[in-house]
Length: 540
Ligand code: TNX
Figure 1 (spheres, rainbow, N blue to C red):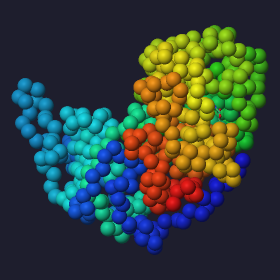
Figure 2 (figure 1 turned 90 degrees about the vertical axis):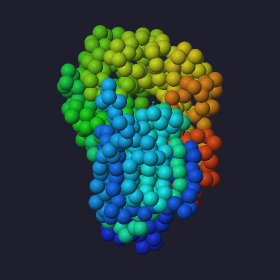
Figure 3 (figure 1 turned 180 degrees about the vertical axis):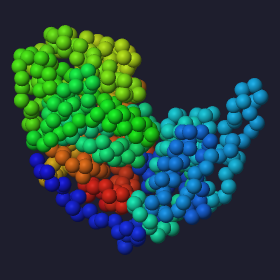
Figure 4 (figure 1 turned 60 degrees about the horizontal axis):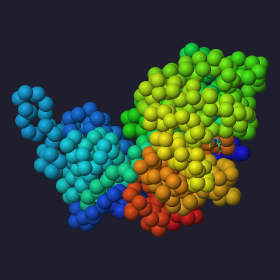
């Protein structure tokens, strides 16, 4: 393990403030076809390109969600363009029905946009594209994004961002011109769940670092951030009813560094920042194994009850809470209740992986107690696929992380009602090395270069599991060897965009030859944005 960032971080050229890059890459016009993940439908109109100017206004349906997205768009575009880009509410057309006083939605084709504007229109009746879909039209007169819900407007904005030259990602003014190619994009996601996981236990990451990871997810239209909050090496979330968990359980990490934990306010800041970017936080309290840090704080939760030293190594599977003790269930009840209080999203992840010291009968009894506790809190239980044999709970979700796509136990759980998040280790595990010489990472699931991460189909991946049972995909980043934000980004890019396309784009729009070309155009964007990435030899 190395504590210095991988070579790519050092090799990254610093963007020159106040200029576009000397090679002109920053100002090169983007193409409608270069969007990642690939949209459902794209229609070029070479005559219709639009240029942002100092006079451009961002207008949005006068509704809080739409206006918030408009503000985010303006905030995105201001640094590089230097334009003021004022945001204004769009007066609604039509006469409110006299009995309700409700206003009518603006018709995106006839609404009162003036020439030269970017217009975001919320039309609750335009449900053709689903709750996350959008339609984006660029003409010489302006840009219109319309959607049934503000999430769709947000995704339309992420597409718009990619249609501008790479220099738009610079933190300070470039020279432009800021041209968007003309045409129409109609888009909606293939899977409802598109996520990534960050292990903040093996190495701790600050709130600001987590927020930056949220930005990376949102940029590629991923909508769930799974936070692996508890493990042997550190307990990372404050729990008022068990106050030693954070300060004592969180006081170290792999390699013996100081670790850390999130206060309730820190965690709420992450949740709120993510929500504003249409990212749902999925908190994981890993049980009954991976609990050594909890036992450091409260030895009475363990089977021997005796004090234990903090663990800073990388072995897995040795720890467990005492599944025969009522104190354990009181503890879990308190922790899950407090986490649920802080988490607006529907999911509570209870881990369940690698409890090698818990006998199968004991493990089953444990899950029979714990899964219903999650349901009683009004939340949907998620567990790593080791929980598959347990009884079904309403809406139960299994996260499958195997490498051999034949798993009869999981297929049986699906027949009993479980749904799946697919995280095949040999496709989605962001802690796997790209190549044998990758300076950090594991290889137990194989080497995962970009093509390997890209070229698989979640709908047909697991034997005897129908497509309807697949909620979506998630890319986990375990951090035994990942110590800094630059290293996190190095492992995410470019595999996160590959996974994003697997989760978002229709199968018919996915093709490796096209993807690697489109992806190549994103390198200059990451450079402009200061994002560290692996310069994959598979991508031109
Ligand atoms: C397995 S995947 C684990 C983690 C490790 C990871 C390393 C899973 C549910 N458990 O505890 O960090 O392998 O790749």
